[in-house]
Amino acid sequence: MDQAYQIALNTLRACCTPIGFKASGKIDGYSEIWARDSLMAALAAQVSGDTDLLNTAKASIKTLQHFQTSLGMLPNNVDATAKQADYQATIDGTLWFVIVVHALHLEEYYPAAEQALQWLSNQDVDQSGVLSIQEAGDWQDLFPTHGKVLYDNVLYYYALKIAGDQTQANLVQESMQKYFWTYELSSVDTSKLVNPVSLEYAQIFQQENAQLVHKYPYLLAWRGFHEAGTWFDTLGNMLAVLFDLTDTKQTQAIFNYAEQHDIFLPYPAKAIYPTIQPGETYWREYFRKRDLNLPNHYHNGGSWPFIGGWSVLTLLKDKQKNKAETLLNKLAEIIIQTDCNEWLDGMTGQPLGRAQQVWSAALYILAYRAVRDKVTLF
Image (cartoon, rainbow, N blue to C red):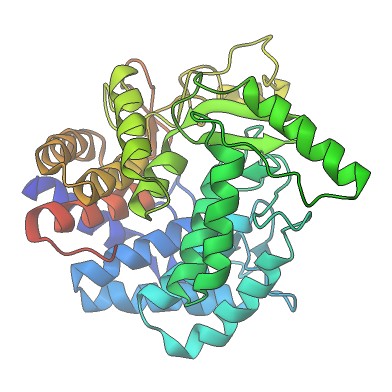
């Protein structure tokens, strides 16, 4: 574990640029300052106590804020050489910006974070209390998640909470239980609905939920128009537990499902389960782009060390210290063997993607410091 920690620190250092953390340290890796990646690295820099890493973290935030749109959206990434911004698949970058600015108490960026929250509130397209996104509109940028997405709304809840808007955070929490948790059916109160269209939709929603009850003992990946992504989204469920969006019974059900279906094997942790197979409803032909999203690859069930790191933090939050240490040890193995690789085959553990990946290193650092030294931001 100690050896892996030093490797992770060295990866973060290899990813330092004058304008922030680039996504990969290798020459053939990603040279851009990706919002979600660099902001997770900023959290790791904070717990590391390394002055140079902290300075790079602040440079990342400064760069991202520089390219914030007039409406408040943060860029998806900024090219470290050309200094050009890209805004595709950006919603979680904007969410992580709010979280990190407040977690690091960077008060000079609070106005930018407030503007980001305003933009985010406008992504609640039906006044349901939760955000909606286009297909492939977050870190799973080659995957069919769309509509009301679990992972993004977990971040939205936590961003509101950490920014001090508990009233809105409570509304998001209530709405998330309605849309994403179906293990126990709670009836929709229609007594006050007089608009016939609203009443009809509420009744249809209730009927649809009835088809899902007791089939999925976890938070669903996403909800769309009369459809749902019913696979287990590991990152979304782990963060929901970490950020206190689930009760004790729900938390236990989530961990039971993860263990029963080997989510943390052979290495932590698979992005989704089960995988989407060719010919199934949510298979997309764009999955074949560079063969990235074949079953057990990439977003489609590949194993991601950064999700493993979040899983360690979640186990620790749930007071499962022994399991957290076991998972950290498995994570240390792949950090050492693959030099902080991006992702691995979900069945074989074969390293794929790029080495010296900044968020693989960052989440190992966060997990290590939490387990070994009880230092955590969450």
